[in-house]
Amino acid sequence: MKKLPVSKIQELFAAIRAQQTLYIPTDDASGQARYLPWQEGMELTHALNTVRSAKDFFFPQTENLVEFKLKGKEIEIIDSRTEQDDFVIFGVRACDARSFTILDKVFLIDPIDTYYKNRREHGTVVTLACTQPEETCFCTTFGIDPADPEGDAACWIAGDSLYLKARTEKGEKLLSALDNLLADADEGEIAAQQKATRDIAQKLPFAKLNLAGFNGENLNKLFDSKKWPELSEACLGCGTCTFVCPTCQCYDIRDFDTGHGVKRFRCWDSCMYSDFTLMAHGNSRNSQVERFRQRFMHKLVYFPANNEGEYGCVGCGRCLAKCPISMNIVKVAKALEGEVQ
Image (tube, rainbow, N blue to C red; front, side, top):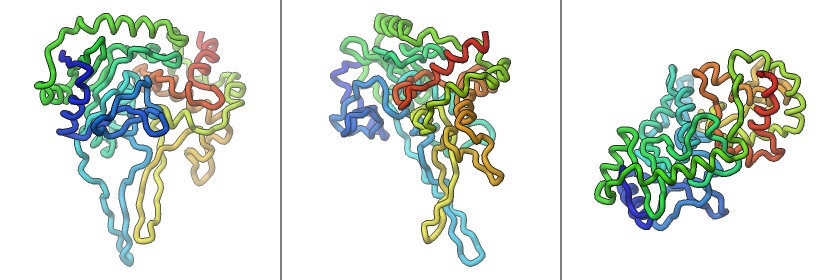
């Protein structure tokens, strides 16, 4: 483990930036926390989490896939991808770091999504342990420790020092390149801070959320529950929950005629929209109840049933904070708890 004074964090950022592009969570002009390319003097946000997750770096909201140009009866296919530069994302929280594991299980299985794979290979994730989890957090429900985050390298702020620990080969390479700035440290130096974070996390309102029984064995019981109409009644179908979610992976692919060719691009989609999965014959989920049910069944039942019990949620709390009618995965799980007793 390594450390440096927090007062020298700008020197750390400058040293990283000298080697590759660096992104940090900072406050934008509107006061909202989001990831931006670091520039001299740019400071870390005091917000616990960014409005949108770090998922954007590996699975962006929109991206061009391929281009076509017509020459008479011939079609020229143009791969519009450019070589991805190496980059570092600093300050990723434990919940968002776990979301990458979930996304990997979608995009890195056969057939591998080469666009996602390329970004994952070039990105180094440096996580930052939480010190003050918020009331909307419930990451511990999914076995995530906010005091000991995953990532290529992990950081802790304790007292006047920033502690860093490499967890992967990428992390080792990054810290080795910064060795002249860092001093050796003992893991015991962060023990008190870790304990304080865990104590807070265990006292949060949703820390004891019970997901026992939310699995493939109870699929039919949960799917056929009479509670779905009432739960979904106030849902606007706005898709806000899906767009702030770090684990949602649905997308649409469309063609855009530029006037001198066609660009094929993909963009995020939402299972809450009426045209989601729309096909020539129509839509397989014609009501808001069905679309609402699909979202939460996927997170709590379908995904864990197909991924050795791992849920499709990381408890970041963004959907709790952003839903305009205060309907979220916690309320759904609590309402359906009786169905799997």
